[in-house]
Image (cartoon, rainbow, N blue to C red):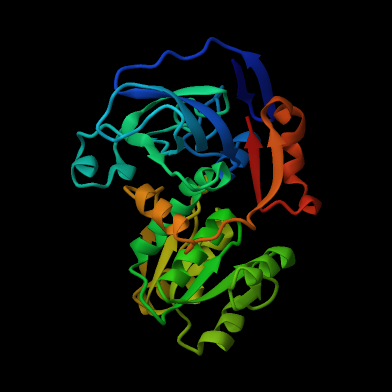
Length: 335
C-alpha cells in the first residue's frame, strides 16, 4: 500500500509498504480523508514539540471499515467512521479518572506514533466512531472540533459571558463555535483580514485586528472590565503572553494552542486581576457527542475546507499550504 513519511523537516517521501494485519480487538480501516492540522504544519517545519522523525503524519482521520471481528459496538464492514487518535494506557491516574487525554503514556497517532497518511490502518475498536449520515470530510474534522469543545469545557464558559478567541485558524474556529453554543458573546482577534472576515461569515459578530492597541479595541466592545474568558489558539509565544491582557478581573485564560518554548506572564497583572490560567489538551470522550451535534446540524464545518490535496501528490504540493496568498483555512487530503 502507499504510505507518506515525513523523513525529516521539509521532506516527505512516498513509498510502498506491506498492508497492516488486523489485530484482535481492532478493525482494519481504509483511510479516505485526512485533515491537515497545525501540528502537521509545525512538524513539516521542524517546530512541533514532543516530535521525532521519521514519522507518518495524520491524526484527523476518516475512513471505512474493511474488516472487523464480531463486537458489542455494532461496528461492521462498510461503516464510515471517525478515528479518535488518542491511544491511552487505561491504567494511570488520569485514565482512571476519565482524563485519558492526559495519560502519562499517551500516544497520539501521527504525532508520537505513526498515523494515517497511508491507505490502511488497524485501529482499536474503542477509537472508532460511526455515523450513517455525516460525510467523510465531516468525520475527519471531529478531532479538530473536539479540541475547541474541550477548551470551552475547561473554561466553564457561561451564557452572556464575553469570550475572546485569539487566532482564527481551525482550532480557533472550533473554539468560537462551541463558545457560541454555550451562549457566550464571542470576539475574534486575528492578524489576517481574510480570517477575520471568514469568522464573521460564520456568525462571529466582533472581529479585532492585532495591529494597534488590542486591549483597547476589546474594551470598546466589552466595556472596561474586558473579557470573562480568553482562549489563545495561536500557538505563538508572544501572542500567548499578550492574551492575559484581554482578560478582566477574575477572568480565565485558556491556552489552546501549543508552541515550542516558554511564554512570559506579566506577574503583577496576573495577580492584580486574580486570573485563572488553564491548559487544554486534545479531548476526552467527546467524539460521540460531537457526532450527534453535527448530525443535528448544530455545528457546521462545511465552509472550513478551502483546499484539497491527494495523497500521491502530497510531497510536491504540501509546501504550497504555507503561501499566505493561498488563503488556506483547512486542507483535506483524499486517499
